[in-house]
Image (cartoon, rainbow, N blue to C red; front, side, top):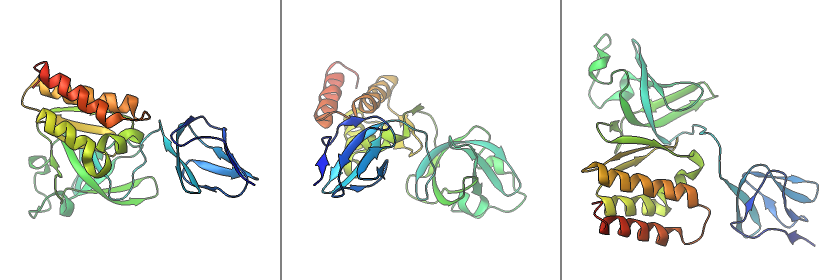
Length: 233
């Protein structure tokens, strides 16, 4: 006989016992210890049938293939650029992946991306922890001009984006801001004025802080509507 000791969407701490018996299956963020399922980290319990996993509430970004990330150009070499994406090692942006146009070897690469430029790129390859390759070829991948960059916990990015982009699209619609959310927790916001950017920023921070609570979408919509009504748009 198995017992489930927690409810769905309960916040648990490392070492907490979530279930006893062999009927439940451990997934991300939990492990089996004899006949018990135990939490590995601080997180939000997600129960899907017999599968138990944790949605992390904190933690640093770990690069994964196909992730869209926002980074800063840190170095320029003969064969491309080195980009800081908030990982222990810088990512590589090679000549063939940097632009849809052909870039000749020996060209002045700073004409394309200079030191300190902020870019939205996609990870095309991760080899171990040290080799990360980027591409700028794809929808929305570009040098980011103007606007502002804010940072959130990478573990909260899925909640900020929402199902099929529902949450971030709600913020875009209410504030008329352009927003690109990087999986590495860096978010670019560009609005018509500082007030709309502030409303978008505060909405994102509110999601980050309240991501574990029910009814979040309704609260964010109410928050945005109140901001718009008070003249922030």
